Length: 149
View 1 (cartoon, rainbow, N blue to C red):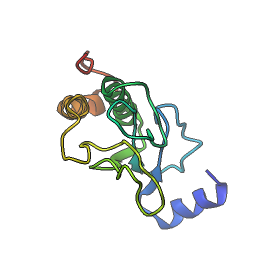
View 2 (cartoon, one colour; view 1 turned 90 degrees about the vertical axis):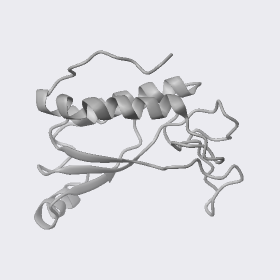
View 3 (cartoon, one colour; view 1 turned 180 degrees about the horizontal axis):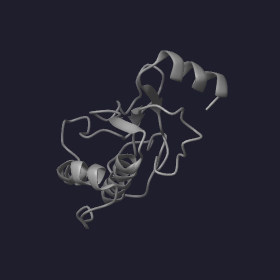
View 4 (cartoon, one colour; view 1 turned 120 degrees about the vertical axis):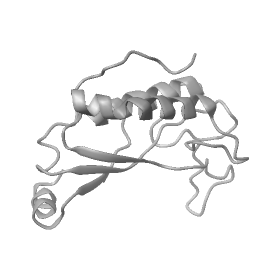
């Protein structure tokens, strides 16, 4: 982060919002963020196993199981990061196959363009959600599980 932006954020904002298109926020050190709460405004993971042409900004493997594992690891890392106070997944539905206004056609939704859920991904969301408070309070992973194979 640019030092001047960091200083301004700390002076004028209660919460810093950032988009993170990486495989994990766990290794983002305190020197990257100002000493303040951080909200991840956007993150996503994509794969090309269901007919779309682009896996988005953070491709993670070959199928929805890989995507579910990436989601799980990302949230676990964020839940253990002391400055991260929230995360928003981008977006609910895959982008149109032919692209939106700027041409993006990412396969990154919770559901596809026919509103069919990516069940592996939904299952991972549910399982992380069930344990997120325990992860946060314990400061470490408190249960062992993997998304469905």
